[in-house]
Length: 437
Image (cartoon, rainbow, N blue to C red; front, side, top):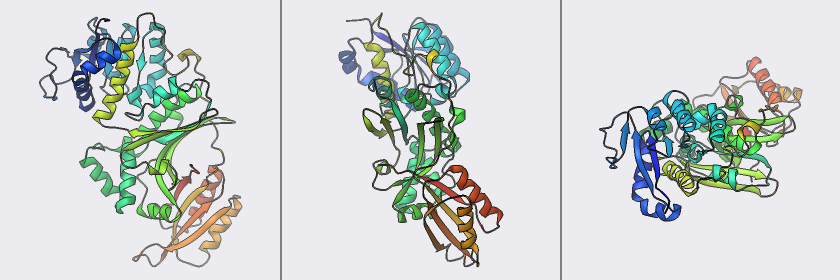
């Protein structure tokens, strides 16, 4: 049997402790599967005395994760610290430069420095594995990197943030407000004390940027993603979507167009009968559309200690199965130096149309003025419905418009014009509609 694979874990929070526990509890199974033992020989964390529910007494403790990354006492450096700078970046870089394999769950680090780190890994002939960085326990990275040879991806999209999906699910199922659902998500540990990173779309954008690189062979461009969060989604939007046969999800979408690659993160209405609409709670889902395979949908636990630990352990096991002299595949599907510069596409006509909700003064001429703004911008309407805004708002009406295919720019011009006409009593709501299968 080959020598044991020696693992060093940096960061012993929920995920790090779960990884250590799985490696201990599943040691015999992993040895049979990998053909060698997998042993935690070093750890680094802020508080060595904290009880993490797993015995790490046999592992050497390091105060400095960089020192652990450089030690000859490990073969694999597992980074679970978090953050895109500081000790996470410096320790991963140090491990790669020292010829250590790296496993990370850090999507922020990869979104910002992934290509540079990949160049080091490929130059040193070591693995940089990151399955847990996107969609938790769903093996989407392995699928895109290894199982789709010959396929040309045309679009990749999905539900990539469990916190947002949990909030939207509760809002629809129980009629709760966004604020109430957010507070409950924080109480249950699904949302952070400061939830901005999740609910405003940043987390989804980081994950989408990694999928975009894998799908289209481009350098990661997390800063070039159009982004909207879910904090302005109201019960009025949830109810209107249901009446129209749709459900609201926060989607990350990347697709190839004639002018480049389009990346966007935003609330989206999807048909209630579609598969993506059936993904509830903290579950994630990723759909990949290709020329050969057609559409593949992967769904499963997207967050949490066990789901993320499963992906991390899977990455460690892949390293344990490799042997000296084995030629490792590129980190992002193509050699890092061959990744093309990212070319941002113009936002094209949206085939699914748009949902527009306007709260307006209840007075003569408003309907006609709205219709004129739409016509002036060559927007064809599929439907237009008027409702009372509520029992305490007798002087207001809610107008709901559903457009046919049109451009983002046209919709924004029309809504800006309606706003300038002084017909609105509240901020307008615009949500894209995806004709998902």
